[in-house]
Every structure is written in C-alpha cells, then in structure tokens.
Image (cartoon, rainbow, N blue to C red; front, side, top):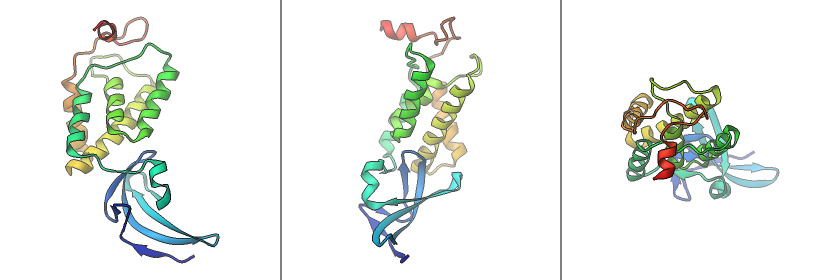
Length: 191
C-alpha cells in the first residue's frame, strides 16, 4: 500500500471542517492516495473528534455521499430562526414520524435538522418525552450545535446555549392532549 499525501481536492482542503451527513461535522486531516487491490484511490481522511471516529471517503464518492462544506452564516441564521417557529407535528403514527425525523437528521441539511430540534423540543413545564423522542432530539441537537459551533467558532456548550436561547423564543407549547399531540397543531392546521 502506497500513501501519497496532497492538500486539496474538489475545493476541499486539509484542516477544513466539513459535514458528512451520516456523522455530522468532521475535519479533513489529510487527502491520501492509497493503492487498494491494484487500484489507486484518492481518499479524504476525515476525523470526527467527539465520536473518536476516522473515516476514509473516496474523492470520487463525495457528491454521492452528500459531503459538503459548513453552512454559511446566513444559513445558520435561518436555522436559528427555524427553531423559534411553532412546532409542526403531523398526526401520523410515531414510528412514521420517527423515520421522517431520522431521515432529516441524516440528510445533513442544517434547516431539516433544525426542524427536528424545533418539533421535538420540550420546555421544563411540558410533559416528558418518550425515550425515542429524546434520543432523536439529542441527536439533532448534537448535529446542529456542532455545525453552528464550527461556523461561529463557538464551543459546543456555547452553541447549545445559543440554540436553547432561540428555542425559548418559540411560541408557548401547551401540554399534550389525549391524542398525544401538542396543542397548537390544530391552530396551525386551521391557519
């Protein structure tokens, strides 16, 4: 196996933070050329520090896996505005909604992730979430805070506090109804 290092490919360079949809924000530590089964492959080596994970992604697969640069500050502003909106909870079975939330989180799209954070957020005076709701909320919050932290050069804690400050601005959410939905969903449907 021969490894040759370069510093830039397809507009991505070493040291740069990127979003890999299935794992969130990572940093390109190197761009290597490796020989695998007699074929020469160029690979981005991406480190996900918090997950203690290193991923090697073939340069040719970047578009198909959805790897992208960090969001611009304008998009971060839109994401923060999104979490201040009213929760949109569909009246479908939880398993279907959970699949939709999971797909949004794994899309790597910051706005979609912020919609999951908004829809699953519960303030202290609201009923507790189920275990699966809390897991999805925490996963979305983690992805969103890591990207906002990287864009705005904030610590993870500061990014979470910024998101929580914006969540606190959202319209008051009432307690759950007998149907297990959030009050305000009917008002939204009528609007």
